[in-house]
Amino acid sequence: MTTTSPLTGCSLGLSSDDLSAWRDNVLDAAANARMTAHITTCDACQTHIAAYDAIAQGLRAIPTPAPPGGYGRNPRLHAATRRARHSALRTRRARHPALRATRALSGLGAIAAVILLTLAFTQVFGLLGGQKPRPAATATLAPYPTATATNTPAPTVTPVEPILPALQFEHADAAWGATGLVAHIAATQTSDGQTFVPTDLLPDGSALLGSVYTGNPSNNAQMAEWNLSTNAVTKFNVSILTGNSGTTDGRYVAYPSGDGAAIYDLSAGTVTQQLRFGVHATPSIFDHGIYLRQDLMGSITKFNVATGQGTPFPDASMQYQHAQLLAFSWPYVVYSYDPNWLTPQPGVQSGRIDVRDLSTGQDVNLTALQRLMPDLNTRLGMQHMSGVAVTNGALFFVTAPDKYTNQLYELDNFMSATPALKPLFSFKSQYQCEDCIILWGANARTAGLELAGGPLAIYDRALGKAVEINQPGLYSEVKGNYAYVFGPVNGHAMIDPASVTIYDTTRLPGG
Image (tube, rainbow, N blue to C red; front, side):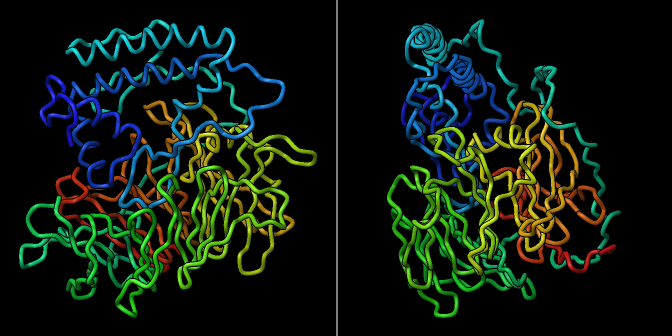
């Protein structure tokens, strides 16, 4: 992995290039997980990353002059994910925050930027020479999420919205017991010494999708399926990178291949399509035979994986041609118009959120969210698809009243003329993060959660609480009727044997 000299004091021998790649989230899922686990315990790596954070925060502090003609197209041309998950096809998207400052490099702002960059790069070069940097006087470093981090006190902020009651937690044993438990696998190690790395659950809850490798995990693996009833592993005739087996809608598997995605037909047992995106496209959402791909310059392509044909979304009949993909669960596509670069037009409301029903073609503007748009835009401006989840009857979304607090809301009957907005809870993190809550799917009973600095938990809508799961893992996920957690047994390497817990949410008590 290392491309330049290793950092002094780094036990893994990482270089500044390695850390830069990790911070920009251009690594594959396995490498990202391995480095994430290491960095949380390595002072040398944390010190180096703090220098990068100082640059980014300083740049964001530079005032942005407003040119009379507007900014035109979005200057943030590179997509990244802050925490890459199981595979490149998993969908959360964040535009690189440091690139926002390119708009500020004009007039007096450019002079200030040159001074700031000179100080910041002096810090970084000092770090590369083995010296710890001194933080610039104008930059306040956010705490890096480790057990020993000294937290920066939360600033006093007057939010647009009221702060909701705090999220309550209850352990799974007390909340659910064994009711609804489909499977608990202590370790996905096969009897013949192979390692199965899960990446997804089939929508019917019958099997795990993943990859199998023997020996060195850096070698290519085979796509495989782990039957939850028998624990038997079936290998497919597909060679992939370890832990990069993609995602499935139950009939097809979409996995990274070349400059796009290959489509494997589970019933035919062969690759049937190759979707081409180009090297600069960004992550996607796959469900019900439809593959939605967020393109680089603010448009979405909708692929029919059975035919391999892609069509633009929104289509030419719509007023807007540039949109940000927020969530997709058949038949609903949730999307917004990027408020950071959309050129104002007559009758166009910047920052609006719409839902399209693909089965009927109906499109609804969620005016019920209008009063929350200032705090919603904090999340939307970060280009996250992780703050929204949609089900057949409800839409969930996260707002960011301040840099330490996120709040979850539910919008019921969202396609009707009288949707019902329900505030659910707030979560205050010890770390500075606009994405303190990340949503990983939802259904009628539960929502998948990732909580920055919080426990591994699944939100139970009936209980109004987060149900803690006692096993290694980074986040919970909801797909169809199932809520589940995959986590490496050793707690950090995503390519190691995993422990798995899966619940059938239709059978949970109190439902």
